Length: 237
Image 1 (spheres, helix red, strand yellow):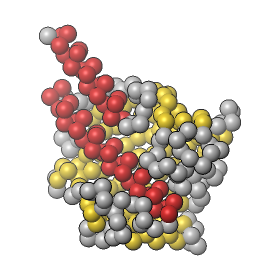
Image 2 (image 1 turned 60 degrees about the vertical axis):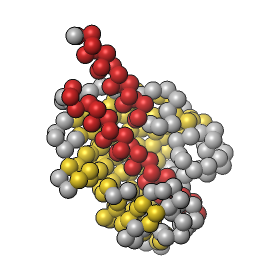
Image 3 (image 1 turned 180 degrees about the horizontal axis):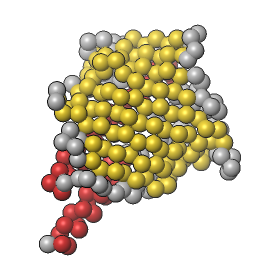
Image 4 (image 1 turned 90 degrees about the vertical axis):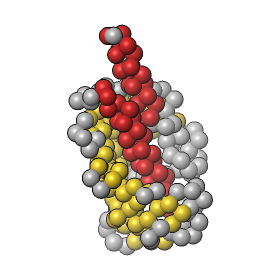
């Protein structure tokens, strides 16, 4: 029986490490805490949804910033993009109205709001993504995430602090949260205009909490990740 439990726990850890970053080429090491064994499958499901929503938002904001409009948002032309570059900090708003179904088959509503003071490659720049009644496929997304360019490290590579505090409203009385802090070091591809040669080193911790109070701590040991962003162009934020 002990061997079976060990095998199940190992499988759970491997599954979460694969979900932690969809584009990873080296798996993330994970550890668990305060998680009932009977709740592991649900924890994996919640984590997958949180990471999926997080990646979708990042991809959408970079698309809007790169094009200055809704052309490449996979939402046809139903989203309205405004970018206030006069006020400080600047504010980019993507407004999906009461419902906007894109060519990717996903329906979005509400607003994604990006507050920023510079671009991704600018030292000391930062941006924060927040939401105004934003829904993705019927699930409300709340919280915020921020990225700060910390400049060059001792090896001459640009690195970033990433803070995540996301909420996914699975129902009126069920909220899953993802909180954490990561570092992102840009090892290769900084000087080119395409992301295809980009290599990052990712490290940090993330905590997933389900509505029932069970939690899991994901420990990301330094590992390489290629093509961090979904677009072919370098990220603006």
